[in-house]
Image 1 (spheres, rainbow, N blue to C red):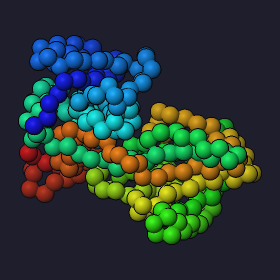
Image 2: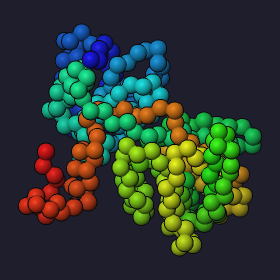
Image 3: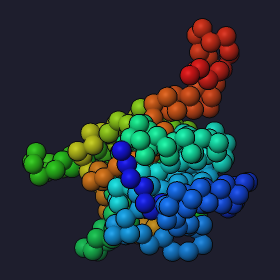
Image 4: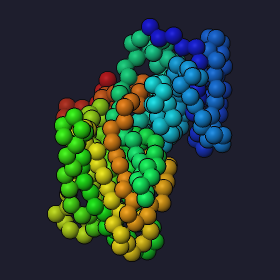
Length: 299
């Protein structure tokens, strides 16, 4: 059993019916004696563990889920991701099903998907700059017309196994994607990367249009820390983008660290079945015996 006393709503007002659904959820929760707070992306997202939210609702598409996950995962707060966009990989709860999922959560029967996350930091002139968590991917790319950039990539194991640093090579490419299994179906797969089951724990390194065709995507152990160095000689500026929403201009000599976060994103009702249904629909997979050329597997 899960006792829900306080709930937080992340509302993407750019989505149709978001405001009406938020009012419906807020009224229903308050009718149950559950205190609610709403966040609509026009106020600072300053949430602390001491505020004690028991559950959060994401009302929007996958981008809204990514935003909510970065805010709530460090607090251990589960998210009910209600889909108000097109078919998404993360926002798996249909608008008419939110109450059922909440009832299941309170009864302790709702499936919860634990998603591996990365923590990202930049080391610049000896100073470490934390940039927070990442659920989908982080992309290092060029700014300006000259797209080719030079990045040195290393992998380091933790001190418990020797803290060994292994050079993986220098990448000359349009950029580099460092993705989680959740993010394997986003930019990474469009750039030729592998699709990973979303509850796996692993790190994907995927160069974007590499100058050397032998530079291929790699999947690393979650124990490893990926270190990317922005080489000194660049023909353009370099930008780091986290989950498509957080940006940090990079300078020559910067070292970017990607390491396993000590927490997971907790997504209610967004497990394997929802993931494979989304894959079948998005990629138009034919399902043997379904009688459909590109159908969704029946429940």
